Figure 1 (tube, rainbow, N blue to C red):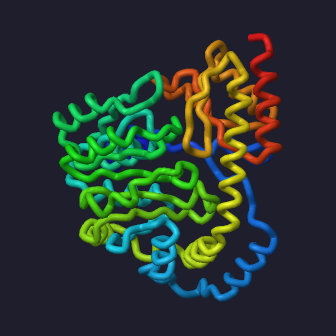
Figure 2 (figure 1 turned 30 degrees about the horizontal axis):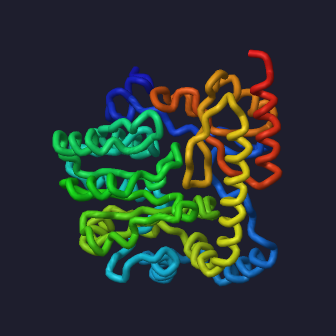
Length: 364
């Protein structure tokens, strides 16, 4: 009799069997500063208007497969050039998956590292060759010479550049980005997941580079629960990629809710302003702690490096006190001894600082 493990080894691709699942920890009952979410809920009056809009939903019918109304709203809200088209996904993860599924077997995917882990994860799950080019260790900037040399040597089909980068929070130098765009033989995808907090974008550059694609998500703005991401680019690319998009991938509730939310720009502008203010206060407080290094950030999170303490022990102390942050130390390399803290609401940030200081003061 063949047991399940034998069947798994016989039927599943080795690339899949070698992967580790993307782990999301249980956050119930915690102050959640580990997932780069907007911590603010909608005002009650906004919720009432939203519920009124949802009453028109017809969940017994399939949603608009073209998402025409939502695409139009996204283009206006995000300053997408008129001639560009959009591809929508169930979060930016699905957009990345569609992009990588379209490549020829064995193609090379390139990105700086450390960066968003799903570029590597999805590439490997599809049997593609992923090449990570290390960032500079002192400030996580692009090593333009090394990156361009890797492009010349490996001729990647697609390059991902997170702008700002996750988990480091920094914006890569525009000169370096432009140089990569100039020499890339294939697609360059600029991932602008944190655009609301960055005051920088490659969206206008779509008019000048037909091999450039700009990816965004609504998750960091404040709509993580809707799972909506999109890709903007030349209509020829979007037409080809759309062939891989599953029909009706954006459900009716997400379409209605996201289109409604994009009309509430004053609400989200105010929330982003609060987060940016809290980010400044949190950075100032962290910079007063001599045992850590605080990195520059253009996102809604802050990367720190512990200079004297064990990152795992500090992470566990925070967790025991009810605060979740992201422990990046297990990633090793440039992220050794690093923690990433999402900017929360004022009371959440104060509680984090309180228990963080206590953790650093505790005997080793």
